[in-house]
Image 1 (cartoon, rainbow, N blue to C red):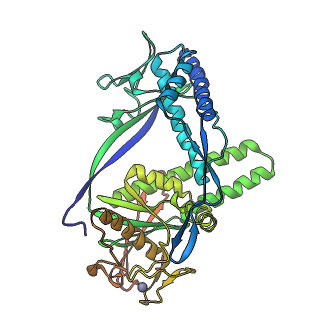
Image 2 (cartoon, rainbow, N blue to C red):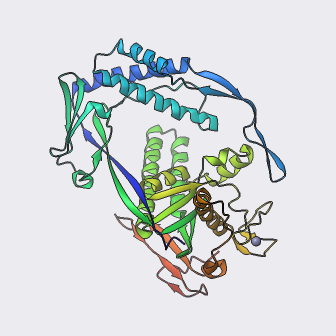
Image 3 (cartoon, rainbow, N blue to C red):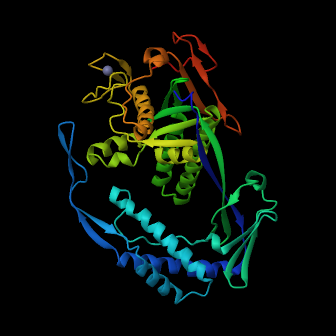
Length: 445
Ligand SMILES: [Zn+2]
């Protein structure tokens, strides 16, 4: 489908590394910064205008749907010039540092407020944000970067600088040729984000359905892809048990140790998963469901579904990591597992593993149906911008009966110290002759 014209897209890569720092002036700077940041947030908060938004009722396939339940108070964050000027003047009153530091504070305050506004989607609490961590986010105007010497000079105030270098660090070679972004200063280290952009010629579009035990993908030139997430589940289960025991015994230190270890192992798995998918599927855009959009339509129903899906699998973290490692796109998740990929019929309820279309008789695994729909929704959205054409079902050369026969099984398996072994396995057309190892246990659903 994309063969005739390839689309070039830019993938922005960001890798953050920290350089230890020992400088007494850092503590003072951070103390001032955190206080000024809280002041800025307080001032913005006090000037928020609260507006009422009334529920919006829309007609959707013969039913009335309430878009935003009940009356919600919408915060309007002050952004006008006069307010920003006043805020800046107020903060300048008690600023021993360069004036740009005040601008850095204001910018961080606004980004925190923007983030807080997520409460409207029910993802944050409706209370004023409090700064609990000690940090100072720099601005590029305060930094002078010497790529030759691999050092950053940060202006504290006129004539007074803080210099850090990434020369002969363990990550030096990893960021060769990359550009430096705004650093974050902590009491004992400076976190430097390195950026690079990569041109990717998109030749494949994989639609991914995110499930509790698997990630199920579809791309016509590959067929179906099944990524096993059970190892991730076992990590969770093992540590849930360990944490419960530590808690019962009242051993807080041990409990926290398990929390840390669980997080590290999970992170490790997710890193390997995304690196593996990137390597295995090059020149690919990976399409996922937009988990944030799930909240918008009929909250209660969705929430239950989401709870089930996210019971153990950290989907947000997986999606975020994937978007750092490869090109990704997100689509509206509604009805993805209820719409027939062949004729477009939407079934009322979808229970069980097998989707059955009452109109055209298609029978297919529910996750596969969803992955086809997610992929199509992305391509449809792209087309809609050009001309309002509706794509329906499979492209003719890729009827489901054909592509269904091939399935690629992928697993992240821990083996010794470097657990990145990928086992791509192709199923024979009849599903019995397996090529590759370890397929015996994995029967097609
Ligand atoms: Zn159908």
